[in-house]
Image (cartoon, rainbow, N blue to C red; front, side, top):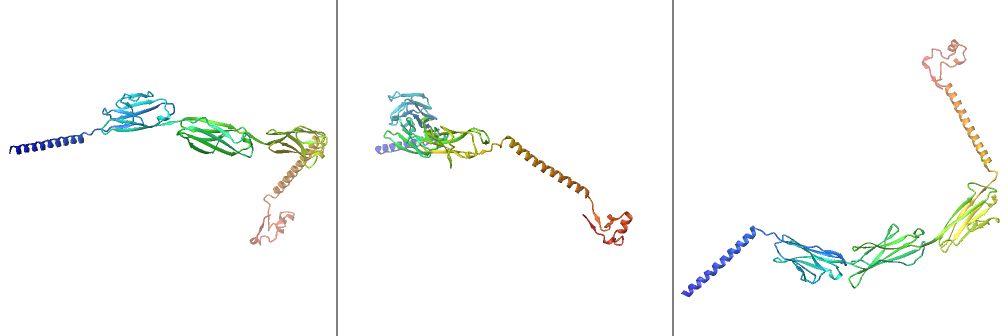
Length: 406
């Protein structure tokens, strides 16, 4: 009986203990519901850094309750535990440590440092935030090449620009003078996680392109205003113009004529000739290089004189039409022509004035004049009484009066 009683007491004690634990647990949960604890937030940022420069990793905590912050590398090795650096890499240096932040710098960044770094907060359960470091590797100097160094107008040329060893891949743009052109690009990845970009530009050249720079512009987040350029050398046919040395104005018989052929091309024209279209150049004409001189002109020299220039690209020409006038058609003849024209104008003006006078007198005489049927014959009467007697119808026909207006 005593043993049974002891067992009963043990059971009652265990039950009492369970009841106490349940009550305490309920009290704790009730207290948590009544007084909520503000959660902690761990924050970090991704970083892009140029190779050889310094990256800064920041682990920030909101509402920290004295929990420990540590920073791990991509291999999950501890770089900093609070303000202590277990990792023996002197490139990592502590920039700031407080309850709310752990900030660490990494100098002389290389491609091997790229990866995901972990900010860890010792809570229950632990919190983590991630900072991805991307290492930017600038491209080498762009290389610009052309298919040919010299191109003729009207032909197509091709220029190539290559940007090597960059991360990420660069983009290439083209400018010809102040105009942007569209090229075609190809991107190739290399074994060391870098990229080579090649761009081709094709276009048809004109003589206006000679001496114009074609610029290859490389765009990359690690560099600015990275470019290479090549000046175009374009060959073109001569441009020909004819300049009159003398005489100026109208050409008269007996005068002398001097013409100069001006030709410009690339390469410079190697030959300049004077010819007369549909006839021969006068026998006494003097041709010296690009100059043509003819003295004592007469009408038989009238015609088209052509200057022909040529180079290795082609041949072009310009024409001058010679028209020789009579020698007597000089200043005196011109004054005579002016006098004749002046006389004709004076006659026309005089005739118009006479016509205006005649019309004015006519309208003045007939202003307001009209005749009635009763007054017919009155113009022939000697006096007023006779005019009344001669009027047809007298007063008897007054009801049939008709008026005629002239």
